[in-house]
Image (cartoon, rainbow over all chains, first blue to last red; front, side, top):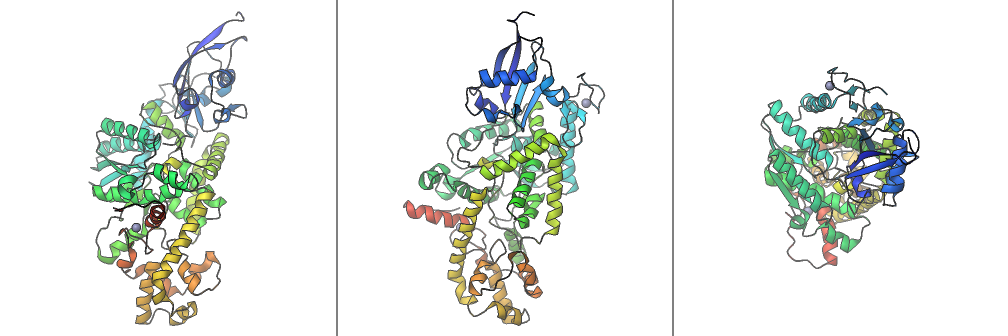
Length: 104
Length: 445
Ligand SMILES: [Zn+2]
Ligand SMILES: [Zn+2]
């Protein structure tokens, strides 16, 4: 794989998390993949550094992973069934981050 | 990690990892199971009467949206014959409640359920925006909570409904249990962990003359055993339309910390949440209950925007309010109570007809938290708060529960809302607000 390759992904933020991402639920992201195959941990870092304009980073990431109370779905399955941060992303994967922390 | 099959149907790909038992199941099996478990909670605790008219406290948020959807589904599937209606409170918070009410309206249309919206503005003459403009952000949650309690009751009364169900989930209850522990406030556990709560004022009103009054509203939490995570997953997989944001006025500090603690525990050991709920229920059985309980307790639903009770700031405000009420109560109670000291109380006991009458009068004046502040001031006997109720002569304690209270004394003299104080909390707050802003024709209710 060349250095410049990237993996196209669909990212969605719901449950109030979209408020931290320009109030937009769906995002098309081309995740740069300098190494063989980036995992979800790489994605989270990328989103935090590049997509998130809101300064309250700790509302999304805490202690190097998503904040407890935020659910992650990988292709509509709980990420805990898919290896969490270590899941190796594939082109056109759909990753959904859902906050349970926001009220209504 | 290789994809696994659903443990239930052995067919579909597993999508859900259940927090309470680590079961790996598919979305269709999950939504069926979720509904089935709520049905079990409802049926095993006989929550509903056949044909009962039930209001669903609807905020537009995930919990009440899921509750409304599940109840609608179950009512048809289980043939409960309930007459369901959505009841929403409009606190008048621009940029928050106006948006969430739009979500409620869409839900009402989707579920084909009638919707009733009652506003603080119409009930009290004040929206929360106006309250905050007047008093600032600090302490405004107390106003919101006190107003909400009556607003739900009044809304229910307008609809002719005697039962309001709310979307409290296991995480909410676990949070409240923790907060009560951290504040040393165990007597409140019983209310927090009960599936059904009925305001004691309602119970009194019923025993007095059998009449149904507007506060005779049962509250229940059909999703008390449901994880917040599963509620969100249910909404996700059923593609339910809900609104999520924090109340813009919410201070949240104390509850926020309790929430964080719960969510951290969940990540390490998901069973902890239900275990905290169950521990709360067990502890509630061991702790002497809040006497009589709390007719005017600050309403607890949803996140703070849903005016869920209390950070430390809130508790402090509450205490202040209670002291104010004590002062007010003494104003009218003094004539009756002065001749009696606490020593006399004990000696006279309950045998005398004279004291029966007095006891009845005093019972109606008892402070909602059961601590009888008025009496403390009249006859300053220092007893440990926690054991105070027990040390009172048994006869009196029993009578307080069984004697029909004087209905008049049980009502707010301003608005008629059932209250253990001469003036109810909402009217006390309104008085303060209206003093500062000359306001004509206040019609509470
Ligand atoms: Zn299945
Ligand atoms: Zn009143």
